[in-house]
Image 1 (cartoon, helix red, strand yellow):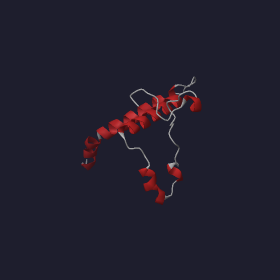
Image 2 (cartoon, rainbow, N blue to C red):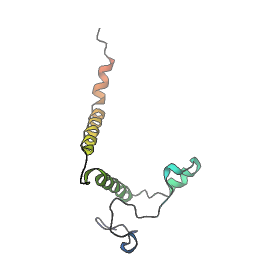
Image 3 (tube, rainbow, N blue to C red):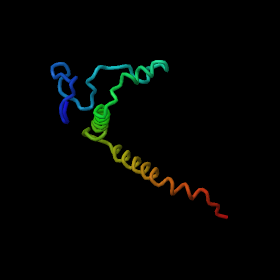
Image 4 (tube, rainbow, N blue to C red):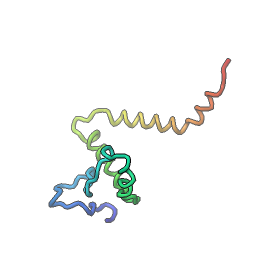
Length: 107
């Protein structure tokens, strides 16, 4: 599987048109349905390669786009998400500068 190819598990005759937000591999138990004793085995079944991580991020991006950006009557929700995400990112970047001011006493 190279860059830009369909996943190996995808079969046009079985799955129909390709959907970039769908996982075509073998379905597994949801994390929320696991018991504590089953978590190590569940983590052991994951594919931990960089390509699998990139595929996961790509699927999440496409799910977000299909839900928020691509509908005909899209709401301003993606813009609000971008603004709040930017605020959190810049707060994290400047936290060390802001934390220094809490140690001073102004009296």
